[in-house]
Image (tube, rainbow, N blue to C red; front, side, top):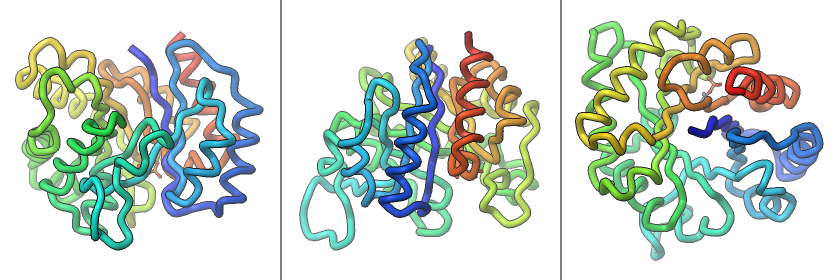
Length: 255
Ligand code: PEP
């Protein structure tokens, strides 16, 4: 299976800064078989970057979308409008769930809308600090998976990517901690088991990424966890050399 290294730039970089970063990144990286590099700039940068991009080297990712295909939804961007611009769309990121109050239903509809429009959803799931403390991690992950994928048919499963991102390990969260690979490994196991019990053998082909304070120094350890097919990188993706180091480690680890 492919290895995915996805940089989530969140609400950082102007269009100009995004373009300069991408230019430098394109110059630095060499394509590697089996490695898929992708970046998620802010919405306004998607169109200009899509013109600048070498899609054989890097794919574009939307950070969010609206599940409706068109209509009176001021300020929203339909997945249908992202067609041709992006290959992937992050759905259910913890900042969308907990800062903007997105519900399981919103997330389920966005996943379905992505699939309907031929864009691969990167469905983010993960427990909060308090859910972890109260021993609810397994239930939360199962619930978020079941709900997020409720409208996905077995045939469409191959069009989905899952990202496990424990909320307490995301660098922008106050007091965030770095998850140890053993913690991550248990949760990846749980996710894989749930997918298999729900969908059967086909579920083995679903890529599962890890995200949460990934850096050049810890990325190798996460990438060697069985069942992990790549990384969703926030803060470290904003620093070109760090993102490139992560890409280089992925090449080494996966070769
Ligand atoms: C994220 O928010 O998706 C993320 C993984 O962020 P960070 O790497 O900064 O923890």
